[in-house]
Length: 196
Image 1 (cartoon, rainbow, N blue to C red):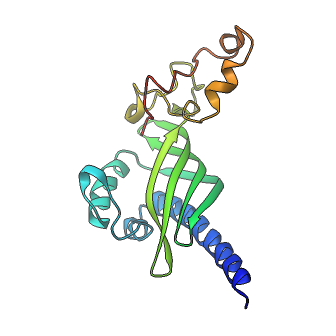
Image 2 (image 1 turned 135 degrees about the horizontal axis):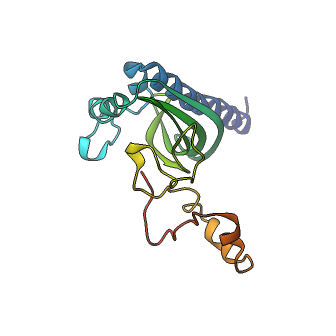
């Protein structure tokens, strides 16, 4: 097999393997299969103040998963960009739903991922999410703000304001356009950081 074909085949196989990470993540979270969930991350994953490694990851995720009963993570789109043969970044669209007592909360998310290949296998090196809103399924998003679910209450959603092109697009609109379209205009990304 020539070198170019081998590289292209490796990238196709890598693309498919990375896409499986997102689906397996959703399955593991929704089934509360913590052991399978941990195996999706690199053994030396950096968990910030929790430390490094999969046991630190366990300590960081289990309390959050015990804050709601059922969940459904609907993965609906995945972009992947390769940085090299063993590293990549990606973005994954997801609609997450959570049963939280009497509420059924919807949270549209965009995951920002970093992937690494170690010993021939792809893993998450890092995964963070940003939301558009959170609201009980019976409430219209924006009727009482854009983050009405208690774990996210009081924080402005990171999306769409953290998209690099968002502010410039609306800055070029005719005066009054934004005010006519929304009661909750997006705050400037310079004033606040992402919600995660």
